Image 1 (cartoon, rainbow, N blue to C red):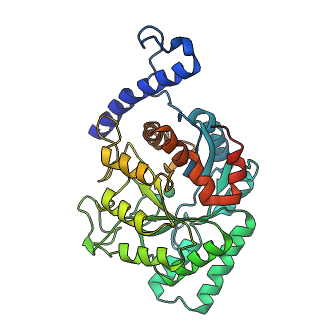
Image 2: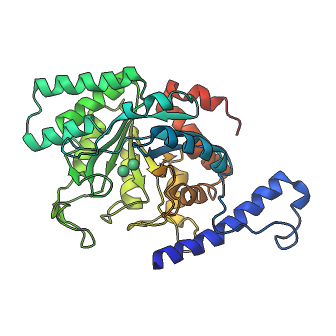
Image 3: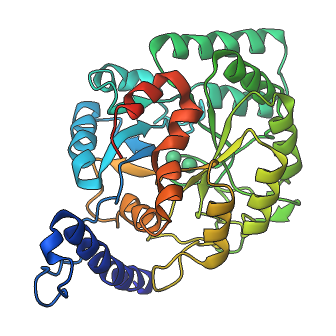
Length: 368
Ligand SMILES: [Zn+2]
Ligand SMILES: [Zn+2]
């Protein structure tokens, strides 16, 4: 409840300013007046769109109602000032009954080229990695099947591989863990490079073996977490032509996804990109926003120093859950605070570069 109240205060504090700024741009006659004179105060729930068009590069959908999810995402574009939403497939395992992959929604997504796109493999390639990590079998037969499935997804029209995982706490999907330098991950990097598509990966940061953080439960999570940063770096260097997007910066549940770690990895690995996600209902341990909603200076400096390497990936679900605060809104309130040149890169231009021909022509046609 405290957390809810806190985020309500943030909502009230920032949107007022942003909406007034927007109104001033739209109506120059209002620019010189104060909010009490002319601008209508928004209610706490009134959405604040992005100041410049952006791509939501990491969203999810209700797989039980794909057509409704697509309608909800299309309806959200204008409200958010998003030009495109990219759906990711939740990472699943073969023994998870809710497992699915891109095929469940692909035909609906393809009705809206340029507005919607989708990655694939979260429900199949990722499950194959988890199975192989558990069995120890990453032999030629396993690799052959893995490659065939990856190529099938690409033929069907996915624009990248995601959402993959290497360390994922129990939630919508079960606890999952596999080394990010597993042979199938290295194969995936080669496939991504060969076909010129990125890999989107969810991985809690674990520099050294450590016990599960005390606020998480075991089971279902493992009591100890295996170190993964050195293995992640081996994955990144294995094929430098493979573009890797490390999901969920701003949603750190081990406490080790710090500015310092992100900075060091971005410096060392030019093929590494990061998605920004700020969830008002789950701040985690290294939240980029202060309690007044402002970006903390050290994070602002990171975003500015590496302005070519970040995208917006709020992890919003469509249709938007009624009982949760909006992830996209909190993340856009962060985006709106960035200097215009940084905002345009992170909001849109970087996505065009990372995903290449499958989205760039549509995004180039969008005016800033
Ligand atoms: Zn995730
Ligand atoms: Zn996700």
